[in-house]
Length: 323
Image 1 (tube, rainbow, N blue to C red):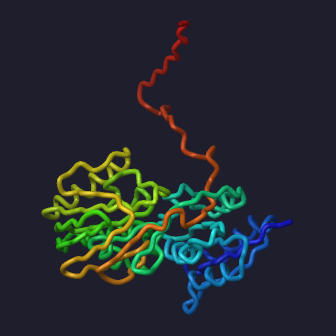
Image 2: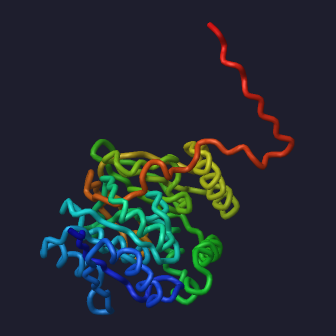
Image 3: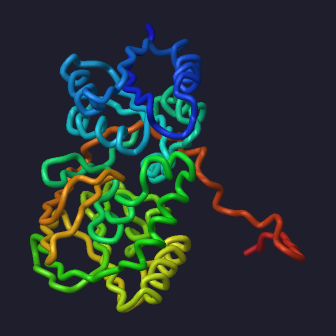
């Protein structure tokens, strides 16, 4: 008996040829899965299509598109216990990266065929679904500036360039962050609330090692005094995240909690999972174990040792001791 799945496909995502992409997905999945293919349009988005699929009681929901499409579809699946497949075809593919899912069509399809699922947290941000992170201030301005045309032409670089341009207009704002236990007031240039975040989302990397299934959200506050400090802070976050350490600069703070209420003065833009969604104030709460996602089997994880290629390398195996 074949498995069946609803495939929600965004034909305008990413930089590839979407007809070719869809043909590849069908070629790999259809021998084993009966696909009910639903296309997103200007009028009907991924969330609406996914909601309808949940109502119909489908076995599996697969979404293919950029992070916005994946997030919208997954939002509708949260809490349904229906396994969710991810085939990333966007610019940043942050969601796939954060969960260790390949961002090639073939790799992603193989993960879905493998059938191994992992339950991860989701979050609710002012009533909208959030899977990755919400950026307030600097990050939101950056996403706002990285227009569609630049994203198509330059990919991830579009965000980087928009970020560098945005540093010129870097302005701190007053922020109040309320958790179940305390209220924090400070000034910041960027506040990022992450559920899961890939290393490329450097402004989310204060704590280093954001855990996808701990029932908590991670806030990183970046509060540089000037543009040079902002660049240094971003670079420090990039470095500390790469080696898995928490940030250690005075202008970077971070904390974990189940929910956050964030108010700013002046009002700041908010971007959720790569899409601009409005302005502060914002309330974000974690939905523990909200989503069941197809993930690679453990064997495919990164090797824990890589030594070859180092200069003048000598490795001596030691004899086991006899005691």
